Image (cartoon, rainbow, N blue to C red; front, side, top):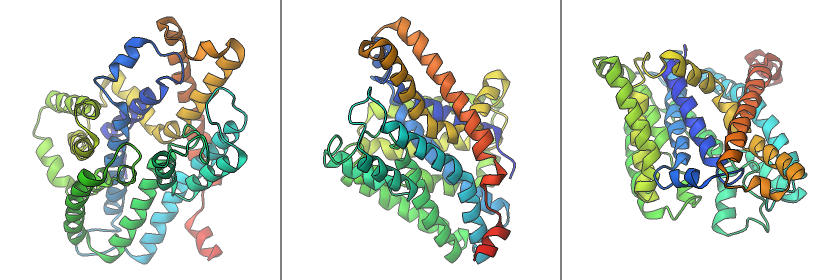
Length: 375
C-alpha cells in the first residue's frame, strides 16, 4: 500500500509532540517552556498515533484484499499479518529495549535508575507487550523507586503494548467477522469504552487510562469508511483542509489542559479522527518544505518514539558527568537554546540510523517461507 504523505506528516507531528513533552525537566528547561504546559499537553500526540495506527493497520488489510465486504481474514492472511507486524516492530523494539535497559544500569543522573532485577522486569514486560499493565501497577501502587524503576527506561512501551494487544484482538475478530459486521461491533465497543473511561479513569496510568482503545477503534472505522470520508473531504479546497488539520492539531494539544482525563481521552480520539480524515485525500499538510520535513520525520517516527527518551537520558548523563548537577536543571534560556536543538538533532540522527539499519534491514526480518519451514 502506497503511503499517504499527509498521514506520514501527521506521524511526524505526533512524535515531535511526544518529544516536546518528555524533554521538559529532564534537561535545561526555562520558565517560559514550563508555562506552555498551562495551555498544551503534548502527551496527546500518543492519541493521534493511536488513530493513525488503527487506520493504517486496517487499511493495509483492506487494500491487500485480505479483508473486506463479504469475506473474513483467512488463515494464511492472518499468518501474513503477524509476520508483517513482527518484521515491522520487533527488530527496532528489541534493540532499543536492550539499549535502554543497559543505560538504566550505568546512569547516575536519573532518580531510581533501577537494579538488575527491576531493569530486567521492565524489559520483559516490554518484550511481552504487557508494559501498560506493568507501569500502571507501578504508578498506582506508588512502587517507583522501590519495586519498580524509573519509567524513563522502557516506559514508552506502554502505548506500544496497548497497540499490540489491540492488533491481537483485531486480527482475531477480523478472522471471525466480515468488516461490515465488525464495524458495528467496534461501534458498540467504542460507546461502552467511552462510558467506562468516564467512570474508571482515575489519573494518568490508571488501568483504564493505559487500556484506552478509542483512538485505535476510530482509526479502524475510518479505514472501513475511507472512500466515503475521502470523497467528502476532497470537496474542500486544499487551504481549507490544511486549516482544519492545523486547528484539529491545536485542539489535540489544548484538550489535556482544558478538561480532565475522563472527558479529554474520548475527545482526543475525535479530534485526532478529524486530523486523519482531513488528510485522506493527501496533498495537504505534506506540501512544501515543512511538509517534506514532517514526512521525513514521520517515516522515522517509530524509531524516534523508541529512541527519544534514551537519547534525552544520554544527553542528561553526559552533561551531568561533565558539567555537574546544575547543568541539567538550569532554568536558563541560553542553556535551553543549546540543549534542546542538540538533543533533538541527536534523537533524529539515532532514529535515522535505527530506521535505515534496523527497521529496513532485510536480514533482520523473517519471510513467510522461513516461517513455514520453521512450522
